[in-house]
Image 1 (cartoon, rainbow, N blue to C red):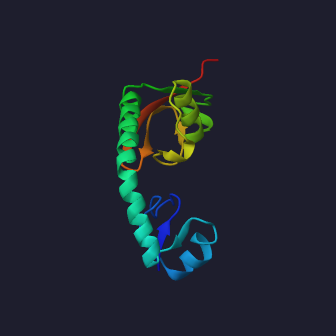
Image 2 (cartoon, one colour):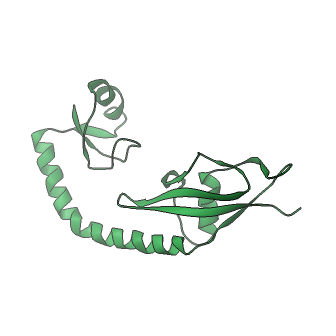
Length: 150
């Protein structure tokens, strides 16, 4: 079943992508949730025209995302967390905490676009996250988790 995505879908594709999925997944999940529409010949023509018109606007968005990526690469971020015995954290540092720390530095990034390697950080030390600023602009973001002073 061919569908046109109306929104970004994790592990499937981005908005306005033409994807091929199994019939049940499309009919029972993607279409009822409003995430996709049937890819009829007329819908494909409309999509092609929209993509042509959007190409020029997209360049400005990509330039802005690249500028933000350069600013983030220059940023050295240390997240303070409560620790127990040794270097083990009480709780963990997740994408929510990382998004809040980046926002304090003046860059607003939605938590759903941040993917910490391993899901979350449970020990102090260096860690890495993958931040998607645009479908074509994805950066590796190193940060450090340090013990909160008592």
